[in-house]
Image (cartoon, rainbow, N blue to C red; front, side):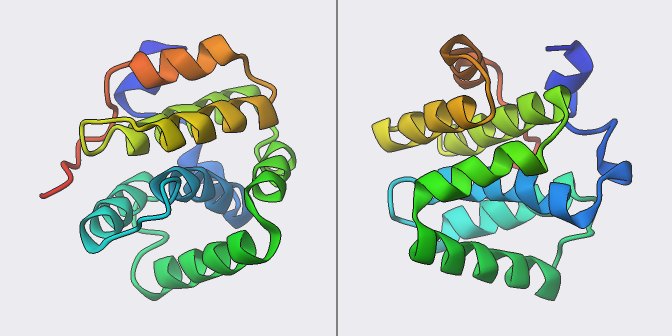
Length: 152
């Protein structure tokens, strides 16, 4: 993983990503945010701020709400495993997969604690993306990349 990716994951790709890939990155973050089954107001607000920052405003307001509604429906209908499996096809570049893992780990660490359910989702995400368990642990142990604090 390069230093630039740690400082601003996705910076090289965001402007060039199509909606499908961009939404796949957002989905990785949501799956972790919802890993414990609790998606409260503070977590949602933090998630929304992170998505707005990541997407440079492309997914804000109604567009953000629409993406999240689709994710919630899909997760309820299909479950976690199919959602994770679909990410491999949509995140088709090795660096994009690594960025997705880092973003998901950052979302897990947003409240300062990575719980067991979040850790399981991070490891399942790594497997689905063809990344190693070591890559998952590196992402979990790395410095948080978000400049948006949970309560800011």
